[in-house]
Picture 1: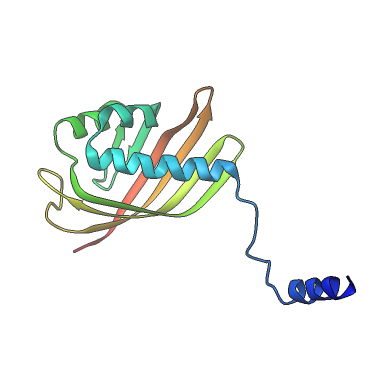
Picture 2: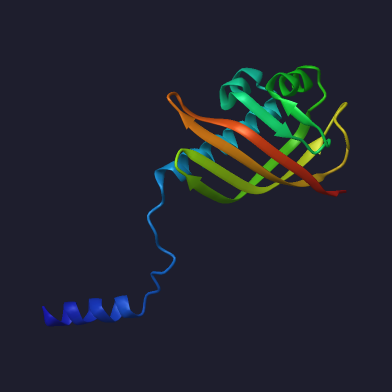
Length: 149
């Protein structure tokens, strides 16, 4: 019996546990929403997008304009925002009460009437999710193009 305790003590002393932490269930939920919204954008699934976006949704866009929800819906509906690929990398999620600030980068391949169609665009982004009675909704977004290839 003493051998097992000694073995366990040696094993634990040689194991780096600094990277192990309990994952916040809110983080799992926000990551799921972030990736789901990106898929909905790629598929032009307006019904899903309108469910992800809050009533006060506002975007500081890479087009150097600030658009309210209705303007963003119109841009998508009129074919002014379309992509053949959309990859979102979440780098950090920070929680402040019922607010989640998600930051990272995206790589998109615009098509059609979208600016930079036919190129690969890398941009930094920040999404602000707010939890309400029905769940999390995206209320604010900022995106900046950093590389156009």
